[in-house]
Image 1 (spheres, rainbow, N blue to C red):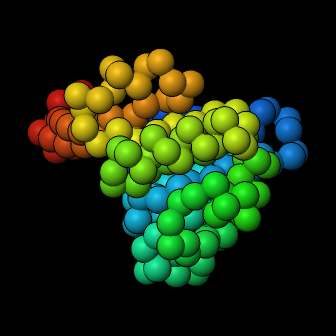
Image 2: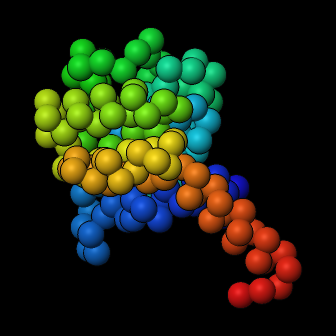
Length: 160
């Protein structure tokens, strides 16, 4: 899959996980997101040691078949995050389909586990501004899709 696929916008928001000349890989956690979360975890695996938490068993199974450590969990909770060592992550991407679940996971990762950088997928564009007070990078799903479709249309029509 090309870097222009469904996770390209999230990947550009995450950036690279290794400093120039650094041989030590940092840990990242991708929480939810189904198959998009799995694809994101696989892409992050080039720069991070990644754990993918999936509530969808098929997404966890497909990730396990790749280079990513995947865990199928019934729910995202403090106990679940503690069990997988969330406090060791320097980056977390929270990408479930519901903003409430994403907000809860992001707050737990920040306050209880002290994760340095958190990107939170926001599914409702009207909520993005209200999340500015949190110490997370809010990424609007609608903006990513619209931008991706627009870029694809421009490339297919020969525009720059």
